[in-house]
Every structure is written in structure tokens, then in C-alpha cells.
Image (cartoon, rainbow, N blue to C red; front, side, top):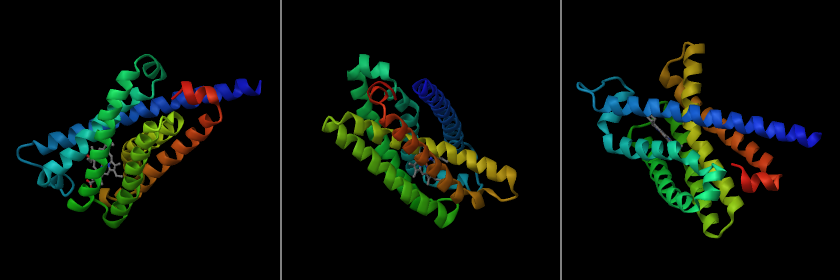
Length: 222
Ligand code: HEM
């Protein structure tokens, strides 16, 4: 009886997680497309936000394009059926996506000091803090899979991907704050970075703890 309830909770949490993944991918594909379209616009944008991307196109591209590739394709890596039936595909795509994550993460740090980031010291501190955790997580995920420690690899990949999803949550917090208050974009930017990444990191730890307890879910689920 109790295990029926646990299974149902797991199923609902998993389903909600996948909804959040799809929403995050859609949100960031839209924002990425807007940013890339803005950068090729003639005349170029001259608002305080958009102009920085036009001034540093390569830094922006090297952050956004690999980041979008990682966020869009990494969900396939969490599908148990693909891992079980096509392990070669999982390994090949994993190498490409780990490289994308590392490039995007490194250029997030470069963006942070080149642009400089909207929202001043608050955004910059959040970027260094979570950017370092993002790069550390992907490095740990690779380290563990090279030692064939599959469960630890899975846990660190969940942390890495949750932080990538955090980039979409930031946009949700920005929207909420600007709608619910009379603050401007730059005023809510840094706080949204902290909340967007922070909530996703917390969600990742909760999911990892929920699934770590069940042997079946750790090996078969995402
Ligand atoms: C891996 C998935 C990621 C994707 C898909 C992604 C996507 C984007 C996009 C589309 C922008 C342009 C801003 C906009 O139009 O809203 C951007 C900017 C930025 N991203 Fe990322 N990003 C990712 C990861 C990260 C990480 C891990 C960090 C740091 C912790 C980060 C920090 C930043 C910063 C500081 C900016 C500049 C914000 C500004 O305009 O001042 N991103 N990112």
C-alpha cells in the first residue's frame, strides 16, 4: 500500500519533471532565436541589453549555440530505453554534449566579464558561483563514467542538466518580477539568476535523493 503511494508519487514527479524539461527547452529556444535574430538585424538593436550581444558576437555565439545544443539534446540521454538499446549512441552523443556544456559554461564566464552582465555584481556573482558548479558537475560526471561508476555519473549529469534548465527558470522569474512589480529588467536580473539556478539545484538534489533510495529506479529510470 505504502509502496503503491511511493510509486505514484515517483510517477507524478517524473511526469512533472519532463514537463519542466520540455518547457525549459521551448523557453530557451525562443530566447536563443530572438537573441540570434537580433544580432543579425539591420539596423542592429541599440537598447542597453541587445547592443552588448552585437558588440561581442563571437563570445555570445560560443555561449548560446553550444548551450542550446546541450539543453535540447541532453534529455535523450536520460531516456532509459535509448541507453539500454543503443549504448553506442548514448556514448557518442554524450561526448558531443559534454563538450558543448563545457564550451557554453566557459563562455558564460567570459560573457560575464566581457559584456558586463546585466544586473551588475549580483548577476556576476551568481554567474561565477553557478558557472563554477556547472563546470564542476560536468567534469565529475565524466570522471565517474570513466571509472564505470554509472550511478554517480547519472547523479552529476542530473545536476549539470538541472543548472542548464535553470537558465530557463531565470526567464520565468524575470517575467514574474517585472509583471508583479514596477521594477525594470536590470533591477530584477541578478535576483532572478540566483533564484532560477538555486531552485533548479534544489530540485535536482530532491530528485537524486528520491531515486537514490530505489535500486530499480537508479538503474532503469532517469
Ligand atoms: C547550458 C545551457 C545554457 C543555455 C541554453 C543558455 C542560453 C543563453 C541565452 C539564450 C542567453 C542570451 C540572453 C537572453 O536572450 O535571454 C544567455 C546569456 C547569458 N548566460 Fe546563458 N545559457 C546556458 C548556460 C548558462 C550558464 C551555466 C550560465 C552561468 C552560470 C549562463 C550565464 C549567462 C550570462 C551571464 C548571460 C548574459 C546575460 C546578459 O545579457 O547580461 N548561461 N544564455
